Image (cartoon, rainbow, N blue to C red; front, side, top):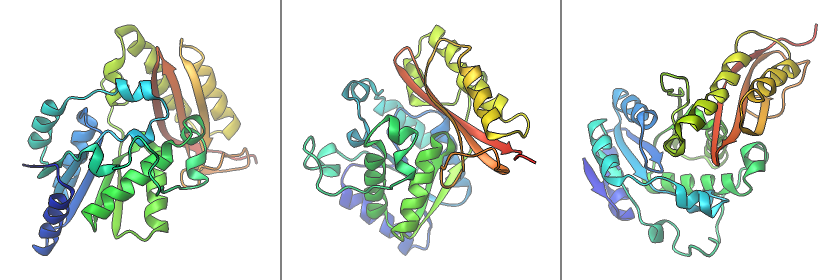
Amino acid sequence: MRLLRDVEEWRAFADAQRAAHRRVALVPTMGALHAGHWSLFTTAKERGDVVIATSFVNPRQFDDQADLARYPHTPEVDRAAAETHGVDCLVEPSLVEMWPAYPDPTPTTVSVRALGDVLEGAARPGHFDGVASVVAKLLIVTGPCRVYFGEKDFQQLAVIRQMVHDLSFAVEVVGCAIVRDGDGLALSSRNAQLSDDARRRALVLSRAVARAGEAPTSASELRRVLRTTLASADVEVVYAEVVDPVTFAPSGDGDSGEARALVAAIVDGVRLIDNGPVLLKGDQ
């Protein structure tokens, strides 16, 4: 596995793979790698891609500096895991290369309106501007590729799909299923911040999503199931919503077909999200 930090070396590596008629895969991460990331590496490798993973904690997507300071950093462990799970090139770009003006605002920002303004976007102002801006830069440096994201951050995946479509990137966006621990908790780098008791209470997120997905019913009933389930545990609920999986418009009781249930909660100061597909049975 090659370890790069220089943006131009990263660009040259990707160009060389395409020149040799190999397809490039990009897996953006913020480090603190876990089995969810490993599954993305493995999926890309199984599809025959040359896997480039990036490890960069992007400060522009944090609205809370304390949250940024708490974000776990495990670079040596990450490098070993990346190599074990098929990464061909791990890129660890410096903050000054990614955002030379930081901490001052960067003059250029990519915003995905509507999709980026609700749920996570409403709760964390500026979050998706930071996400879209950094992913746009990662894609520009990497060039034509497949880019892999997990569905745990389902709204992020939708934002990236919209950005790639609107800006005509020569990129295929691949969404991969949520990876969960045996107890059902969606894997997240933030899980390491949970005490045993907080983790037990955090299981209410996956429980709420699972209950909402049990049987087709109306959007209002699905919201009631989500909120009632979340209320059964000592967590701070941020949102519990049912939306169109593409536009993220709130689902109505007259809607039928596939929708997405999304929940977010704060458990002892740790912000967690989860989601899953649900079926709507509209009013007859």
